[in-house]
Length: 255
Ligand SMILES: NC(=O)c1ccc[n+]([C@@H]2O[C@H](COP(=O)([O-])OP(=O)(O)OC[C@H]3O[C@@H](n4cnc5c(N)ncnc54)[C@H](O)[C@@H]3O)[C@@H](O)[C@H]2O)c1
Image 1: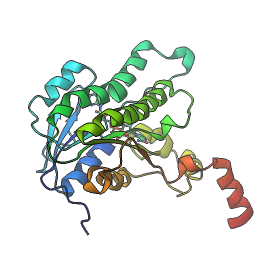
Image 2 (image 1 turned 90 degrees about the vertical axis):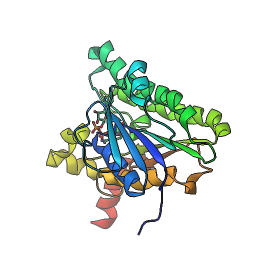
Image 3 (image 1 turned 30 degrees about the vertical axis):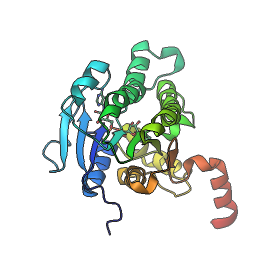
Image 4 (image 1 turned 180 degrees about the vertical axis):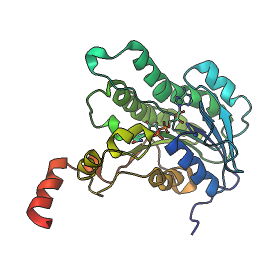
C-alpha cells in the first residue's frame, strides 16, 4: 500500500551512490519523486532507475558542491547521506583524515544547504534531512572525527531549523543504528562479532538500508510539516538501552 505520495517533488540526495543513500533514492523514487543523486561514485545509480539521475561530484569542497548543483532547478527535498569514516587511535590520527571526515560529513551538509536553499520551490514546505548517526550520542574507540562530525551535524540540524523555519523549510535528521553496509562489514562479516553486537540491540538485529526509508519518507512528506530541528534514531532501540541490561534480563527472565 502506497501511503506517502511525493509525485511532482524533486529531491537531491548527496551520497546517493552509497548503500544507504541509494536505498533512500529508490524509496523517494518509488514514492513518486524525481531524484538527483550526487556522489563521487555513481556506478550503483547509473541507468538503474528512470526517476533517478546521477551527477558525479566530489562534495568535499565548495567548488565541487557548486558545480554539482549548477544544473539543478527548483527542488523540494535535500537529503545529505554522503559520509566517510576513518578510524585511528588518538595518538595516530592524521590531520588529513580529520579534515576528510569533517569535509564530507559536516562541511558539505552546510554548503549544500547554502547552495540549495534559494532553489526550494515556493508555496510548499521544503524538507532537509541529514543522515546523522547514533555515533553522535555513543562513543567508539578510534572514531574520533566521525563521532565529532556527526555530533556537529545534529547541532547544525537544530541551528538551521531556527533560521529556515521562516522560509518554510523543515530541517531534520535520521540517526541510523549499525546498518549492514561496507562501512560496517568488519562487524557483520564476522559471525561472532555480529551476534555479540546484535545481542545488545533490543530489536535483536542490525539495520538493513531499507529500514531508514520509512522515517525518511515521513520527514519528506506533508505529514511532518510542523516537525523541525529533530533527529530520529532508527536503531532498533540501541541508544535506548544500557546493553548489559539486555543480557541480564535474558539470563534472568527469558531463557
Ligand atoms: N552503515 C552504518 O552503520 C551507518 C550508521 C549510521 C550512519 N551512517 C551514515 O549513513 C550514510 C551512508 O553510509 P553507508 O553505510 O551507506 O556508506 P557508503 O560508503 O555506502 O555511502 C557513503 C557515500 O558517500 C559518498 N562519498 C564519500 N565521499 C564523497 C565525496 N567527497 N563526495 C561525494 N560523495 C562522497 C561515497 O562515495 C558513498 O557512496 C553516511 O553518512 C554514514 O555516516 C551509516
